[in-house]
Image (cartoon, rainbow, N blue to C red; front, top):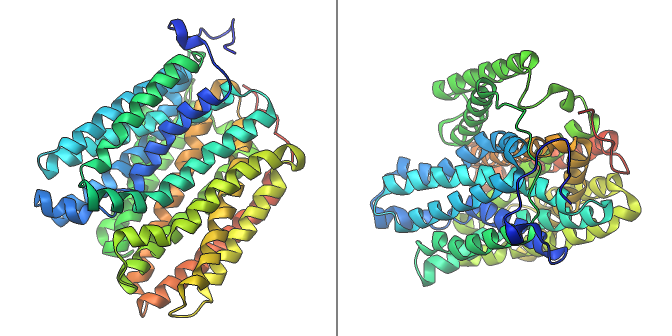
Length: 471
């Protein structure tokens, strides 16, 4: 239901205000979110072919891969703030249009420079889609039971898309060519936009809340620098002068953001929200489990290709057990949450993830593949099992008028966790005495991150939905 009174709502565009039933908003939102996460990983197996086809340099290939992630991470909170001000449905639809057109530009790119530019625009569209996706689900499914199930399916999209990316990318590259890695987004984007306009109600707007651009710029700079430092540290080394300078500038930008938020009349991220134990704690849990899970996916993908000699397609198949678990775990946790509350599910998921990565770390230098199936399944199941509860905790702890901001915060911390896991995994593989040793150390650190998330969840995740912070 769209609220009347208070903040002005977007005017429904005819059928846009109608809903044919609960599944339609969920399908619309999950389609958009699936595209965003898929494009983080699907490109990994395609870049060697892209580089040869477009005669791209190594630097260009890195920007094709990382430029999207940098823009996405840097603009997530901006997308959330714009959604709160202008209406989450409006910003979500704008993001879908930008993302779909940019995907067409990627697929049609005649050279590496055009492809890099289109990937950056894709990241902008993704940053508008993600915060609005959670806010629209919260709006469409007001009851805790419905919301838990919706967040569960939303969470499963992240694991499915991230883990299926290498498989789908390898399949497309070997059959119809690398350009279809991007063209596949076009029909999905069109269906997503049609479903959203037809079945998702218009969102409330807060025209009285100005966008604090100095704080936005400071935040974008801090997150972009942090992501760039984490990505480049694996290649350059942690003591490289450029890495140290980037880290120092990141700290300065972060300090500038905090100072600005303390004096701003309409802050981007009210600091009082972070003082909420459920909201801040659940965001930190999200950072830790993304660090562990995406670090595992990255290092496992390199292990299967470089140490076992698997093709891109066979690597995707080898990682599929983790995908299967994400689908099952998210739906199950959404159903169980109304009976048990969120805390037991998050803690259980984190302990399972820790057990999985610890199992891989102790499996030996050259374990049989079937010894690794269980650890991958445990990590995939545990991460998705905990994602529903942590997502619901963040969104329930924030006032409705800051739902987009809360979603942006949660997804920013998760994106930073993913980048940190990938960067650390790459650094360990490159620096350790042997690939197998670096892999085991990476898995052990991931297991420790899962355990830290479990301990934090005990303290910060309530059994029931927390009461929102004061608006």
